[in-house]
Image (tube, rainbow, N blue to C red; front, side):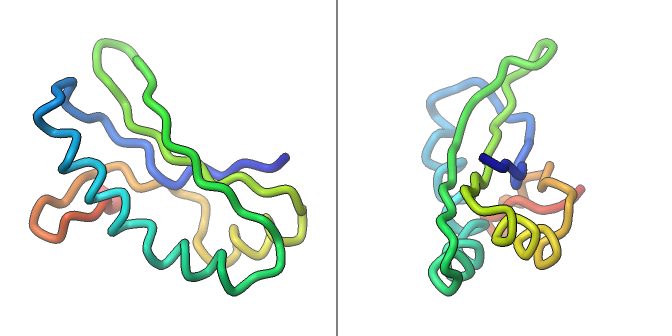
Length: 95
């Protein structure tokens, strides 16, 4: 299995913000979902939480069964994960 980190962002540890993070993840991954539908390889998206240092970190990974699909994905979307939440557009961005 091959894995590529799409989002890695420090977030507030409060359930009041869950809806905000979920909406931002869906908005950010919209183009990734469309890309995954257009390719033959299987792509799974997995959201997880990590307790890094003193804060909570939201992580979203794309997981691939096929090396070719993984390579095409990395060429299409690059290597750097999104690490900042833009509350105006409700998307994660590079910060």
